[in-house]
Amino acid sequence: MYSLEGRLVILASGGNLNAFVELVNMYKDKIYDVASRMLKSGHDAEEVVAETFILVYQNLNNVDLCNHLKIWIFKVAMNSCLQRLRKQKEAWTQTEAACETGCLTGTQQQVNQAIDALPEKHRMVVILFYCHRFSLGDVSKILNMDVGTIKTYLRYCREFISERVTYH
Image 1: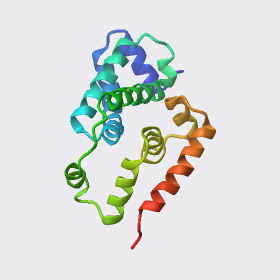
Image 2 (image 1 turned 120 degrees about the vertical axis):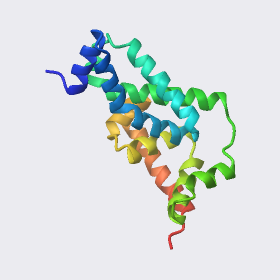
Image 3 (image 1 turned 90 degrees about the vertical axis):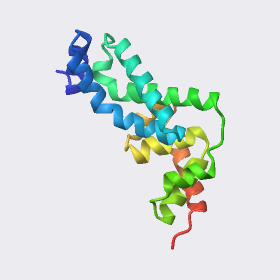
Image 4 (image 1 turned 135 degrees about the horizontal axis):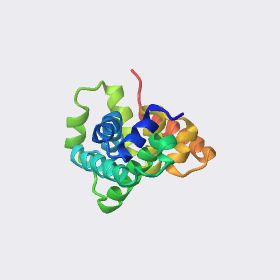
């Protein structure tokens, strides 16, 4: 018996547009959040969401998607983000950072700035594990990394962030 996602994949692969729309609605906001945190651009994040669901649609007949859709979708989105980051190695300006974090407390701003300063792979691990609450195993599958490496990255990230945040 398939999960709700699995049943929706089967229906969508049979041509049921409503089932595909339901799949998109289940994940579009989560993918947008991950992409916007990685790319620091709402426009680029929207493009990643679109690219991700185009690939999902093109691969609906893949039976494995019935059981591993969530992990696969996030893997596609993260790969799309990495491709974009490699193409545009532009620095995020302080003005954009101030606009995005203007409503946050000082500590929240410091944490976000510290996360933004992390290397790409480390930032992806933090976003998936802490922000989207993926398990270590799921993060490992999404990023094609060993669980031990994920743990090492998380330890490094915690130290990196704590060195840059002052608590009042």
